[in-house]
Length: 426
Ligand SMILES: [Mn+2]
Image (cartoon, rainbow, N blue to C red):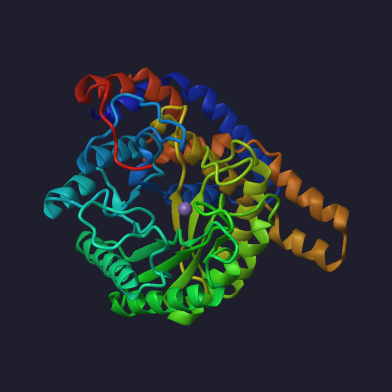
């Protein structure tokens, strides 16, 4: 399945005059507030989010999994799927691989395929939350934190191998999400588990190439229910500091207890130059991994406000690695990812419209009402014409979901791959 530029231009042509009038009206309105619309559009066009290789098939729950049809059965097909999303949105120019689910067989062929689809290799992800075939030691009671030195060594060696694989593809960062924890009080010695984890991470960190970064993800619970070794951003930051300069905290939106002020975490980490990676998703109750912006779009906007502030004011923080970390149980995974990318672009665009100088002045004057007015004026602006204009400029679709459906992408994928293929992953 290939989408030709001409096909998109033909589809865009149908809605072009409506878009132009909406865009012109919005540009005039924003220009009165001294907003440089071209600069906003350029930032939207530059913003690229990695798609994880495990999110392209139907996800499941511990109760069941319902296949979607036409799922990618190989790494090649996964990259082709991301190529389709990128062609439509011009926002998904990277893939984040999961090892061992996606070890390339032919590195040059994979690199070539990715280049044709304009896809870069973002952070690589290790997996010590499940046992693999022919694996000597088991991760049942943890990996990097395990009481057994042999298990820890095996988990460290796996992470080093992931870095090696990523390095051959041009990746520059390793994401470690540690499932280690305990389901029952008394099961783990907290101090021993954390000490083992720190030492294991240092061993991986010191083996990384000098231009690599390590992202340490945290999560309060799951798969274990009583405690998680890296439970929160403070623990992650502590471990990152213990490793060194190129180790950072990674924020996954779903990895917080309900009502956590995530925007404040983002802000403080950027102030300290320690926010390295970011995983987008949305949730109602826990780590639900549903479509970005589908439940709490205002929270997403407030988080983007801090990200934009940090990107403008915190040169001590590196460029972030952005990724969607979601699972698709009901919707077509590609449609779901397109909706997530749209929500990310909208939240980013709205955050870019915030009058930062006026907000700072209102904060200094303790004008609480005005602070809220400034934020909500930006939030209430319908920024879709800006996001569409950015896509139009870069050769994408004015309306990616409509184009995806009109081009019959899923039907074509089912036709070539079959109804019963199953993608590796969650
Ligand atoms: Mn994540």
